[in-house]
Image 1 (spheres, helix red, strand yellow):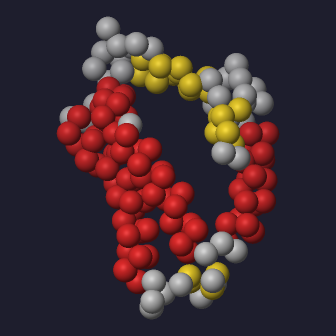
Image 2 (cartoon, one colour):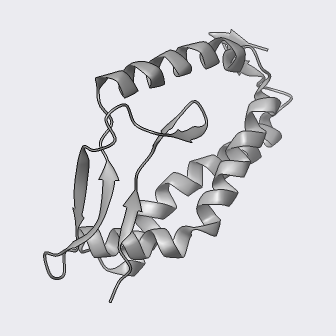
Length: 137
């Protein structure tokens, strides 16, 4: 039997926080048998407003940092996603019904790839590229 997975918080401004209306939930269904395998808190309008506000406040600082500085969080994100690749693929496969190998390579692998490749690409282009025209370094 698969352990029931419950996510009862929303991720806003770099932290897991209680949702404005935490009693509203979304059942996650196991595609193999139609049973509820977990639940997630549904964010509401107040949560969206908090998330948008946090994103707007972070944008100014983020856009004024160097490309090299931006590469580090991307590498960290790629490492964190990679560390959870097998578990994430297993859960995705249960919910969506795709073979685990496909979930591992596509649903998890595709987000990992750009996060890991962009910093490496930046490194090879450092002499020719240092930021976009919209956000020069």
